[in-house]
Amino acid sequence: MFLTRTRDTQLSVRKPEDLELRAQFAAAQHADLFVSIHFDAGPTPRAHGSMVLCYNPAGQRSTDTWGALKNDAQGAQPGNRFDPWNFLLAHRLYRNLPPALGIVDLGERIQNVSVLRNATVPAVLAEPGYITNDGEAQRLLRPDFRQ
Image (cartoon, rainbow, N blue to C red; front, side, top):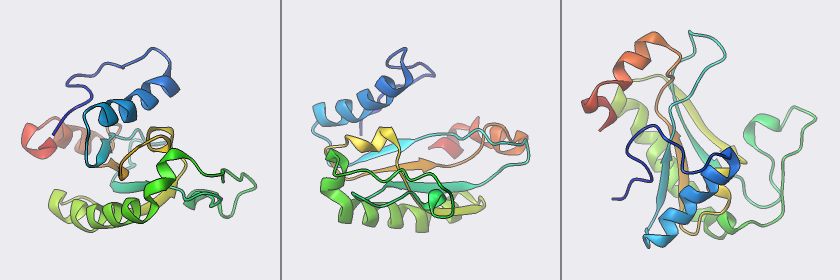
């Protein structure tokens, strides 16, 4: 297992570039898969729960844009080469993460996220909690919870 960072620092001062460098790091390590772990910030202090995101297949819109006017569907990207494996990895993680953490399940989603767009191996993004929720923030501070 390799970590792209071990403390709260960015790999680049530019956010889009920072996220792309994470997938590049996984490729440089000859990783078999890439799991990007993020701690979410909610719209309110009461937001809580865990979700797993999978990059949207070529031409498909993100889960959260189906009812909106926004269409974030794109053509094929490097991350689409592993769509079946991305979905399998996301689903397995989704089924096990909330029960293992004892946290509210917010679901499995398809989303156009830049950290997964250029992944050269099966890849998912896990959001195991909200740092803006006092209760979850306290749990996230515990090394046993993060492990």
